[in-house]
Length: 405
Image (tube, rainbow, N blue to C red; front, side):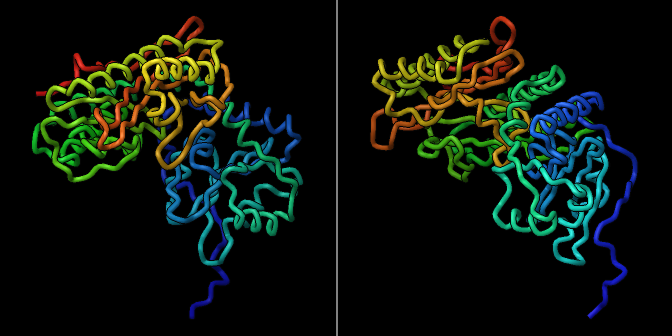
């Protein structure tokens, strides 16, 4: 067995130069300044951020965990990411701030790195929705059981209102989602498999991201293209099912630009829908258009939900509603992120304000064996303005545009 007495527990290595980040230094400086205001309000000596979305928001670095812990420690004086040695110098290059690397020569070197940055702080902010029981025990051991304050709700609220630079990036994402949608629509034909159609959309989006954002990391963009029975769930994975004449189809594109998520979702039919399918589709389109008309500053998420519920109830379809009617956008993905306080649901009272970005995406799920069976969903992205909202999705929706062949 080899001895490890001279192998470091932690070290720094600025390997190469800082890479261009999605936003200017001033943007990150403003975010850290806002975080320090949150710290002062809670009288915190330090914060330890651990989720992918929050570390990316405040540092620019989006980690790939692979079972290893990552962190961002912020005090009134420092801002430092903590990353695993397996990632080399990339975490430093892809962040606006400092970085410390921990090694795996010895168990719990991550916590030793965190402790060295937090110092003697006795009140530490954490993300309560991300700190596991095992991590809490290690934190108490290595940081001498400080008082922990959950600041996840505060950081979530900070992320809800987007800066002009964020909105510009989100608008580009919506444009690229439309490009993916058109590539998918062009690939739909009887006998084509869901996976083949999905790849056409994903490839088109990644090529456009590479063209429009040549300095960004190209990662995580994806497509869910569903057909027939597979349309019943909004997040059902792609399969090798071949589409058939008469199928209901669900087109869903998700370009990812520097951790920022955008989406396009559309109902389509391969061939003319039957009368009941058409009725349900038109009802969902009516709900979608009502939702679009409601988005403005001063209305609450619950109020939007109530209005759309009323429309579905009058159509005898409310029991088939699948989930909430929309959500916030920003640093978000299917495996990280979520600004849960800005979802269009009955139990969310958040009031919309300028700078928020939300979707309208009603979905009806009609079970198999019922006339009109399938999942119907339309999805547009809106930027809330001083006087209303701007719809940044361009791909057309409804039976007039999305019956193919």
